Image (cartoon, rainbow, N blue to C red; front, side):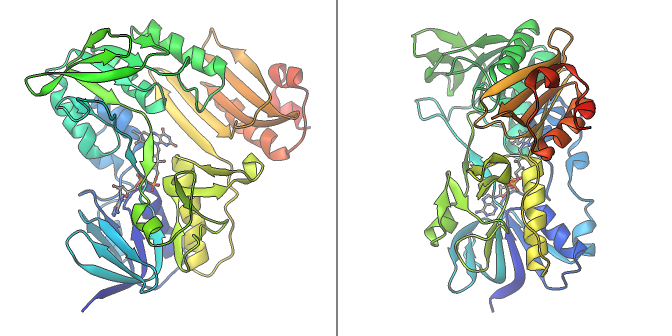
Length: 408
Ligand code: FAD
């Protein structure tokens, strides 16, 4: 007999866990299961490139809910199993062990797989990605025998990993193909600030640098050959070049794709009836970005989209319009971002870059649309209100005055 759940959630990560929890908060009484291909109960990923990598946080403290929560709330966790096929017409998925599960509603919350290098040596021992607990456990298992690390990719995950590994006494080089780190997500002043901080902590940051291949010795990575022909010796290579959203079974089932993920509306509905998608996979029109299609990779987005979908399934009315937020930690630097800077036409800096307490404010047509706040919690809180007001402000005043005072 084929099993059936009223709601089947695929992906036991941030969004999947939150969707199930909110369903029960909403007193949804139907049967609920989460299928996840990792062996662990849902856990928070941000610590993977921060405290967990540093050995400062035990895995148990990263669990999103206490172990007893799932049984208490009658949420079945089907771990270590991967959904390989979706039949949207028959309301059925097939798992990698051949079993089938039927569903009333399907919530697709599968996140993404780290993009890998395509050059020779990409799969050698010593070449790592940082997406799952398994990835980081493997990496940490090799740390004692590692002195030189090359991080490929100057995004947040690459920079966070570089910060932790330099703190652990490793010699770290960061390779970035573009002419500044964080180029895809931040304005130039923030990129230059983090570049300088990395260098001040002894990290060798190389911009405009592309990789030709990974060099091998005795079956393991021994270095990174650059397009210039130079070779950087390395016992470990960390690849942080983004993710590919894990949407293939859903797209093959007929869901409309967008931005590399799957298209959803303001309730998280895909183009397939009774099928929802949330988190890193969900391309959506974002009201904080002039309704442009975006796919956000953040805890806020996964949690808030999950809540909207769970409420919708529970028969409530909701719409995904949450203000985007994100954070990143490197050494004593706490970055908090709010809003979306895409399409900005002006920036100003508030506070002091030298004192490592400042905010970069992004404007579009005179309206503040995003802030990147470094060690500036107050700006982050008040900046949110500034963006939410939807008003225009004089950038010079925003650079100087207390933000609260501008709101009147
Ligand atoms: P995930 O949490 O990735 O969960 C998806 C789950 O589905 C995974 O377990 C995956 O293995 C599983 N899965 C995939 N395909 C299948 C399948 N076919 N069948 C079954 N299971 C499947 N965000 C922030 O806001 N701040 C941060 O500081 C921050 N730091 C981060 C650091 C790291 C190292 C990483 C990797 C991410 C970080 N993020 C951060 C991003 C944030 O963790 C993600 O945006 C968030 O986890 C997305 O949630 P999700 O539910 O979409 O996907």
